[in-house]
Length: 116
Image (tube, rainbow, N blue to C red):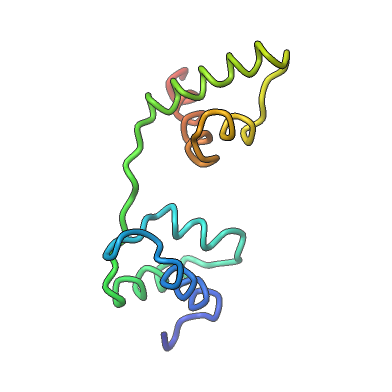
């Protein structure tokens, strides 16, 4: 990983160690999770992708189904609100819906786009 920043190199190592995806694929969500709040630059992100590809992995976007996720989020919000008398947080929606936080946020963003 010559020429790769220490942050990018550490992220690549973490992804390769944890097996971020199937044998030949690494999801963009896995890369984003590994980056977390690290101060990466565009060059670092490109280096991460390059190093993963050199290691024989392809970078893939996980398929999303916004309408199904939104339906699940809305059903969760309705039932949670009926039981608790308040609106749930994103974390509570994720916990009660079975979706992860990024899927909940994606569904909420999708809803905002629909109402425009």
